[in-house]
Image 1 (spheres, helix red, strand yellow):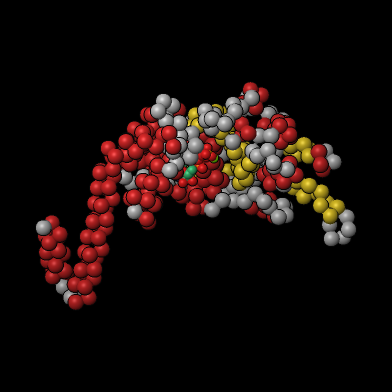
Image 2 (image 1 turned 180 degrees about the vertical axis):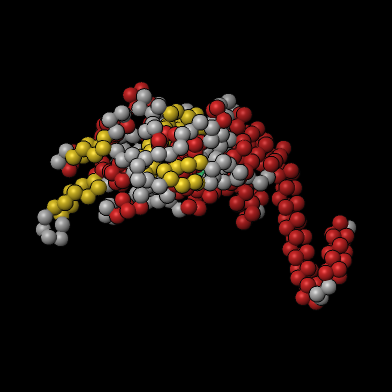
Length: 347
Ligand SMILES: Nc1ncnc2c1ncn2[C@@H]1O[C@H](COP(=O)(O)OP(=O)(O)OP(=O)(O)O)[C@@H](O)[C@H]1O
Ligand SMILES: [Mg+2]
């Protein structure tokens, strides 16, 4: 199992992962250390993200957040490999939010200027020059969670700067700052992610992959989705579509597409939600998706209709109870009115 967080002078506190998931111990980064960093670009994510995140179990029954704690304590980089919109990026943000750690997501974009990540020399008010850390450097100095998003698209000039940080040296050389070499902070967790199998993506080169001792395949998780998506028929529709990805379909059915379906259904109605869902697929796929949807549509609609009827009955009952309570202090009378109301509703 994951060993308890240790480390001199650093506090340790319990974080609680949502929905009946066991608490884990993570090391808290000392707040006063942040003060040393002027103008932090890295940030502690909103705790709301930590509360919203639903954890999943990985191989061997370990919770994803426990694996991150293990990686943090043992200085092992983590690589999440898998489907789009499956919560890979959210995991590292949620972890940082729960642990109160600094967070930065490094975009792997060819146009990115290394100085925006590592830092640069800027003029001072006094007429001199000084070095200002970029967000990656800040995390290496002060600790935090560094997410490397879509690492298989990392431009070679950024990769070259990161190699010594990602291997056992755990050092970041700052050529722009007279060759300063920073030893990574005790509490630096590096989590990269990638979608390996899609068109337009490339695989990760072996030297890079080798720098991630923890590699986690990351597909869509049934248990997570059953917590996030209310409509079970929508989930079985998604399952049917996913069975066709790789043969009839190419577009993945992402977890967030299902969440958006429910959001749109609630705000804009079922027709909008379903057309919007279909629009995510390529022209050549839409016919096949529509065919499967038509099989499930009736039950998907019934679920939302029933939910609305229940909600309306609930609020009618609340209104009735409030009216009776304000008209009478007699508990028995209130109970009789409640029973009568239930009876009427059953009719
Ligand atoms: N475990 C989860 N708990 C709560 N929400 C989730 C979870 N997994 C996915 N989501 C929802 O799906 C959205 C997309 O997740 P995220 O951006 O982390 O996916 P990703 O795997 O990084 O995708 P990509 O590979 O395209 O970057 C989230 O913003 C969230 O709304
Ligand atoms: Mg992502």
